[in-house]
Image (cartoon, rainbow, N blue to C red; front, side, top):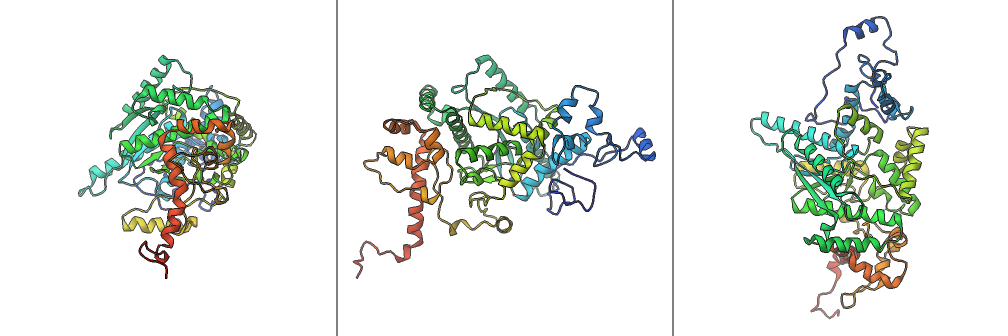
Length: 490
């Protein structure tokens, strides 16, 4: 977290004089002003008292303010440790907001996640993480709009923002009236945000099949019923949700998909991938940028803890909506409970897990595609050097799992040939990662072809393109050495 020392080199400190230049378009909270009682206590030499904010040392900390109320359990829960909830509670409300927003701001600017020409689609689930993500993006857009209105030439455009909620009523049991009420509450949250106006898209998961909702719903249910493993079914729904977000973004002209994934969720993802044998592809899922999708996915809350986001919602009365809260005896649920227990015993545990996984080498698609602007290209090249990423053209294209889109090891990719445009059961299995083979694909090999026919066309086309991509790349590399059809080779 932030501190007041000029020599602090802590990795969790987000002081305003950070070495990375921060764009001045981001709003900053007003400086704390010492009250009469605070000035009196400071004059008495009690400025080191734990009741004061550890940053501004002028206002009372949240722990002191809420110590006598029921909110104390929420604000101060979680114990001590760097970046933990106890450290958060030692800030006053203004400094806490400034520090949390500073993490978001630093992630956006240092990784060029959002540019003025972008049109960003925020994935909104109604929970605290996506709610804070929406709020921070809104504040950033609102500040950019003020700068645009105040400028004379108005040369710098204001990026657009849209909000999408993916309906999963076909796969999750939820009363119709409760669901409708939740959607209306989300719509109200978006409409109550100050201008610029943001479009709110409500899209069902089955829309990835076709415009015929009944046909899509039936195919989706048949696909999910074909997955016997509970964990596999949960993972498949995650992949289908991403396909739905991609479809919304493509249809409405969005250039980025923003997820509210935070440190706590990434820590769970690290352990889940380890248990499922997805260590090779793990680095692809935990970066700020994931451009393996047609519309790049960004994670600006990657450095924020779930506990901090909960506190933010409580302090600013940010409305959250609980659509569903199903608990299953899956690997994912067990890992989430395990990480929660670790965090209670040591609040720095989630950050430690993510920092350790962050030492993995990112894939070449864990960066933004090269922009057309020359100045932007130079900035992108500097980031490539910083993260030691090679240019895309110097690397062969990755092969991806047909189902989850995870990158595959070259040794695990087996070539195949389509006969009469029909893929054999063996080819289907070979085109998937070991996790999907074990948890999602049917055990009975005779059912594989039928299962494959139930997959959305986006998955099928993406898998075939991925498997043929390396052959195309190799041919392009040796194109000058190949004989033309008219040459006899003599």
